[in-house]
Amino acid sequence: MTISSDEPQIQLDPTRPVAEQIGRLIGRQLQTAIEGFDQLPADKAVHETRKMLKRLRAVLRLARDLLGEPQYQRLNVDYRDVGRLLAGRREQAALLEIVDKLGLATQSAVYDEVLTQLRQRLAAQQAANPVADAEWGNVARDALRRLAADADAIDLATTDEKTAWLNGLRRSYRQGRRRMAAARSEPSADNLHEWRKSVKHLWTQHQLLEAADPLWFRTRAELWHALSDALGDDHDLHELRCLLEADPALAGDAEAQAALFMLIDNERHRLQDEAWQLGATLFAEKPAAFAKRANAQWTAAERALRETV
Image (cartoon, rainbow, N blue to C red; front, side, top):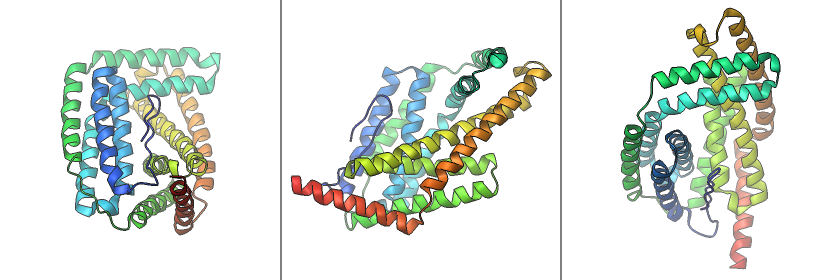
């Protein structure tokens, strides 16, 4: 496993048993998150921890057959609930970030003042409702320590590992394909958000398998990442629009609100177009064919790596 400070990477070694690696990987990721609350600003620590928990839920999905259904369900709910505990703090920061991204995407002096004023009002609103950093960090540390202690007791089956993780990968892909079809049929914010969850799982799972064939798995991981980012920004813009509809004063006057709505809608249209194009490429294969190709890549790399040992 390798971890970078920028975008943590998690990888499985094709020459070692998968079950042996999963528990250790989960424990290390949780310990890194705990340390983050001592080393990073609160907002950054919360953001990194929420991303880590989402990655671990993707790991659980890949290893679902190895974990067994009762253990999988328990761990998945535990990680989900801690992520939700941190959601409020992250959502505050995400609103400011998406306003900044909207400004970069627009790159028009005509809208600079409108966006600047919006950002200032959002920042002032958040400052008026502060979250105590120390208290927030303590709550998060305690929750993560409980998860880390549980990680030591994770029990994974060791028989037919490849079939197990291939089943997990195929399930994630099938779910993502179905969710894309649902979003295409009805591109509601909820459907697009559900599609993004599946895409993020596939992104992490391709990172896990990257060491087997860096070219194939990394190239696809980068595409899953790009698709996840497009859908994530689309969701954040939807949330921003809902906030402005509920509290028009944040936008300023009616003219400023209309301008912001136009900017948001135009950028969401662009992001969704990008998502459909990426999705058409990534989900072109049927699940069985996708899993067969992934298996072939892993098997060839596993054989080659073992021959060099």
